Image (cartoon, rainbow, N blue to C red; front, side, top):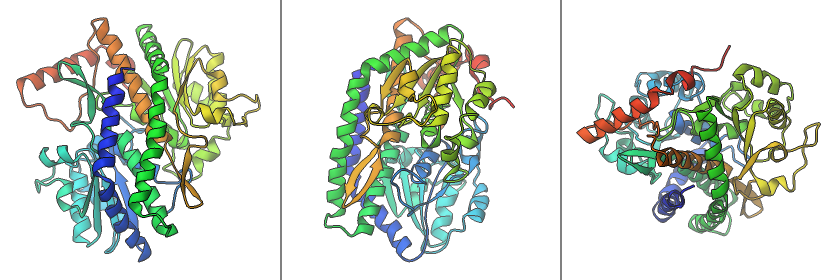
Length: 466
C-alpha cells in the first residue's frame, strides 16, 4: 500500500472532524425531534450510497431511531448499471413515497456523493413540499458546481435544512495515478464513519448523559483514529493481497469477493466503483444481504449447506482468488465457504478482526475460524467485538464497515501501482457523475475505456448464473 494513500484518506477524515461536527449534531437534533413527535427519521441512498441506510439498520449495537429506505432498485446486486439508471429517473419518487409515506414533521436524509441525479433532487423537492425536514449527506464541493440532471436545474443541497459534507475527493476517487487516472474511492468509507457519529449523537440525546454532543464527538474522534492509525501495520499484507490479485488476473483466473450481513457492503464497495477495476467477481445474493429483513442474513450465516450452493452457482475453481470479509470470522457459513474453497485450491484472503479472532470460539463443526483457513489475513484493526465506544453504560459504534472499505480500496490502489510499474495502464472506471469537458479529460476517458475493453468478456458481471 502506498503510504501516501493512507495520508490522503486520513486528511479527509481529519477534515470531517474539523468541519462537520456541528453539522452532524444539527442534523441529529432535527431527526431526534421528529422521533420525539412520533414521526420518522428516514435514510435513503442510491447506488453505492445505499450502504449508509444499511449501516444504520439492524447493525451491531445500533439503534432503531432510523427508518432505512433500502430498495433493491437502489442496490448493485441485480444487474450492473441498474441503480445508476434508476437514480436518474425523477418519476421513481412516486414509487418511493408510495411505499414510504413521508409526512409533515418527518425527517428525510438523502445520501449521494454528487446530489445531482433526478430521483434524489425530486425527493428533496418533494420532502420540502411536504413540510418535512431534509438532511443531505454529500460531497459539498462537487455538489455546488456539478450540473443537475433534474429538469428544475437544482441539486438536492438546494433544498436542504442541514448539509453534512463527506469531505471526499471531487469525483470520489481520490488517489492520482497520473495522466488523469484516479483511483481509491473515498465516499463510502467516510459516510459510513459519519453514520456511526450520528448513532453516537442519537444515543447521547436519548440517554441524556452528562456529556455535551460535541464532547461525545471529540471522544469519538480519538476512538476512530486509534483504530484507523493501526491500519498502517497492514501495508505489507495489503501489498501481498494486491500481488495475489495481479497474479490471479494475469493467469486468467477470477477474483471473487464475498461478505455476509453488513460485510457484503465491502463487496459492493469494490464493484463498478468510481476509480475501481473490472476484475471483481462479486458474490451478491439477497439471502446474505440485510435489505430483506433484519434477521435473514444472520439466519443464513448458520447454514453450512448454503456454502455448497455458492460454490456451484459462482463456479469457483482452482487458482481463483477469494476475498472473504467478516469481522468475527467464526460463522458456520463463512467458515464452510472458506473450507470448500480451500479444498478446491482457491486462494483465500481474509479481511477480518484479528483481535477478536484471538478471543473468539468457532461455531463451525470443524472448530476452525476464517483466519485458520486463509492464505493471507488483513486485519481490519477494529476493536474487539467491533463496537467499543461507550456512552454512559451503552456500548455502540462499530467501525469495521468504514475501516474495511478503506482497506479494500487500499488493495486496489496498490494493484494499480503494480500495473503501472510494469508499464500497463490500469483499467480504471471513471465516475459516472463527472462529464469530461476538456480535450485532456476526453482523452483520459478514451484511454480508460480502451484499457477496460480487454477485460470485458472475462469479467463483465451479468448477475449470478441461474
